[in-house]
Length: 252
Image 1 (cartoon, rainbow, N blue to C red):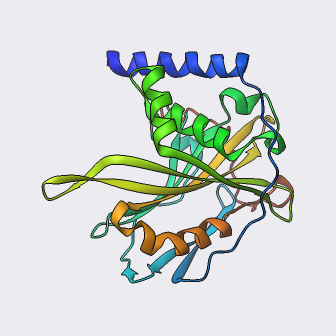
Image 2 (cartoon, rainbow, N blue to C red; image 1 turned 90 degrees about the vertical axis):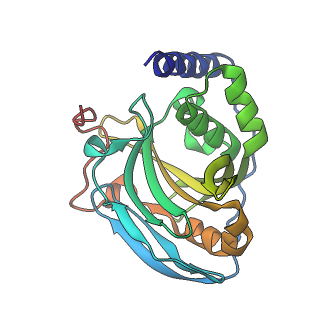
């Protein structure tokens, strides 16, 4: 509709503005600080897009009954998250009773992230760029206000293969409703980049969210899961690997 087109135009304008005026800020790489183990975990490895992570099936006193709502699949056939079709949900599992969601999103690098290598990015820049593009805000001012109030960059680190990872937390105020009052959500995300078949970067983001009232109980297990997230380098991807930019618009 008109709102979706306007939002898409605003996001495009914002991305162009960021590319023209933004300057990469220096940041010291923060080491991974392992969370104190506080949970039980399952493990997922997807050979199609060649990534892996463990996920909580028990976090503190929260027992989770997870249902796979989207099986792992290639980028070209995955459901779009936003109207611009860039962000795709390539796998998702959820607990209906506790309203806990673990999801993997993939999108091409956009805005400032296209102009500089991952070694120069900060977690805040990664979070702001991805979430602003995903937000479909009615105005640039609304988007910036959301980022300032609800997004916080975290650790940046490298794995043994040299891949950079960026962790960040973000809130979704009043996203779900239990009873009479809307209840916000608290999310922990970790993003890594890997080139597609034409060399352009694609962003792989593991996002784990829960109601705000469960955050403190689940936080240690969620951070342990985030620290486990790995995107295989191109030289060691699985034989079944399908690059995200192979027939990227096949869903249409």
